[in-house]
Amino acid sequence: MKRITLFCLLLITCYPALAQNYDEAKVPHYTLPDVLKTTSGKTIRNEEKWEKLRRPEVLKLFEDHIYGQMPTDYDSIRYALTEDDQPLMNGKAVLKQVGVTVFRKGKSVLINVVLFVPTQARKPVPVFLLINNRGKENTDPTRAKKSEFWPAEMVIDSGFAIAAFHVSDLAPDNKDTYATGVLQKLYPEQLTKDNGMKAIGAWAWGASRVMDYFETDKDIDSKKVIVVGHSRGGKTSLWAAAQDQRFAACITNCSGNTGAALARRQFGERISRINTTFPHWFNDHYKKYNDKEGALPVDQHMLIALIAPRPVYATNASKDLWADPKGTFLALKAAEPVYALYGIKSGLPKDPPGIDQPVIGAHFGYHNREGEHNMTTYDWGNFIRFARKF
Ligand code: GTR
Image (cartoon, rainbow, N blue to C red; front, side, top):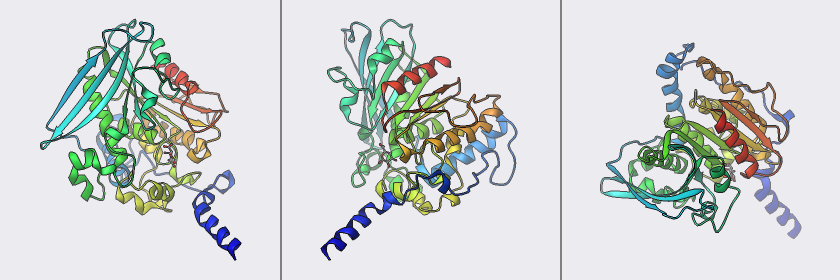
């Protein structure tokens, strides 16, 4: 009896994980929504019509059904800069710490930005901006702690600036407290809407406010800001770049479901699972698509298409089937028609390249690194190569 109870308990706890498919043969037959066909059935044949008709429509579909609205109004923004006189990293970089405070209706939110600028490079310099969803020690300004997740020394040596902010400054990554940041303080009305912004929207909003700061910093080339995110941060970097066209390029690392991987493949993590485990990431409307991927008016290739003609680099790791490496590659491929409107060829092969065989073009990059779900110096090395191409 005892054994049976234990078995049942185990089954209940493990069922959602077991229910995920990792077998290519079991991927259902699916048809992706046509990124070039408007809801009224018109076919888009050039970039003007894409930008005027279809792009706004697709952006709104993502807002309404997945990521929520992106409020852009605020009363004022203030930057408090602390700059170290003494260069760090053997004289190679200067540290700037910036407090970005955003005010609306008498309330405010503070975003802490860590920024290293190379001393040698000609100014203004391009910058990588990480949306940090891991521990704050990963972006240690003192450099007592160094992490592959944000290898500042390596990036500085390559002549780029590197910056980061932490997602908890915008919205705690917790289903019970996520609203206590930007949402309750600046945009409480978002909390009452089915298509209101939630945590991932708030993090992407934060990336845009850091972009506001970059536009005022003479050391930084604000036309060359590359937004980077890993996993949930990679879902956010895509959404940030999709809705804020000031970002020059997007890097989405192991972002998987509701990131760069196609939902309709139902491979690895699925919408029902992500909405159950992380109900605070996406808007309430998205819950309607639990186990109903086919009913979504979009799929993730259309999110990538929103970034066109700007470059996108997507990665995976070979042991991270949860994030569906093949589905990520196929999403990039399915975004190609929109880049083609701008005369851009993706340069991606027909089939996914092998493990540790990066394909790096001027507009698309993809690799599947040997190993686990993570962001490493292998990944960053390729991001730097990619950034140099454009
Ligand atoms: C997982 C989640 C993924 C991914 C990951 C992460 O638990 O299922 O969608 O976001 O967390 O952020 O590391």
